[in-house]
Length: 85
Image 1 (tube, one colour):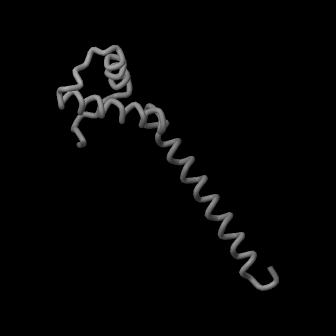
Image 2 (cartoon, rainbow, N blue to C red):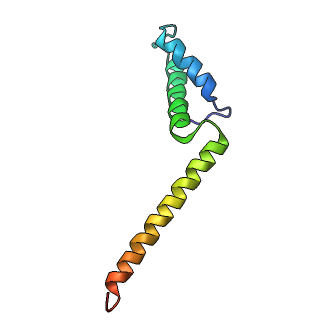
Image 3 (spheres, rainbow, N blue to C red):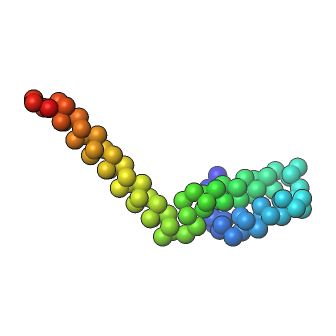
């Protein structure tokens, strides 16, 4: 359900706050859809960062960490697989 205009973390926080205060009707399917999107946006902002620069930094950090782990495991495997290791 990707919409053309994405919800900002600030909008998501405002919607979640209104829901916590009991102002929203959970019986309306459209309201439930907006609440689900607000929850997804809030979680995404919390996990990956609130803006594009934070997400790029997180993505780059994960890529570097994964690359280092693969190199370490490959080097360790080569050490034990080569003769005299």
